Image (cartoon, rainbow, N blue to C red; front, side, top):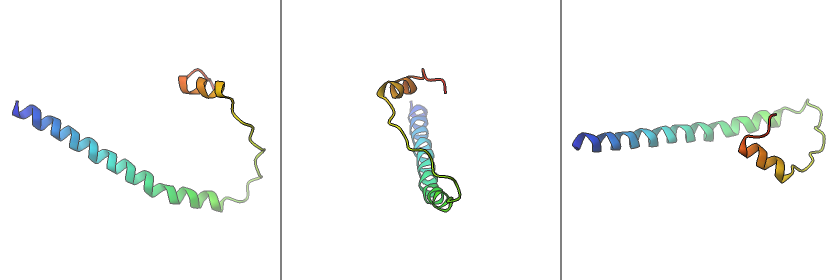
Length: 67
């Protein structure tokens, strides 16, 4: 029983550490992506975006949209 409790605690510790590493990577990458987008001014302006219907969003979330 003692081994099982250590296994559960160790697994929890590893998962928390992995979550912190992923959070740190995402947090650190955000300013770099913002700088890259801000410096990218040579592209033509994109066409105005049309609103996305709720049916399409539901299809995407359910995995029904193909593309």
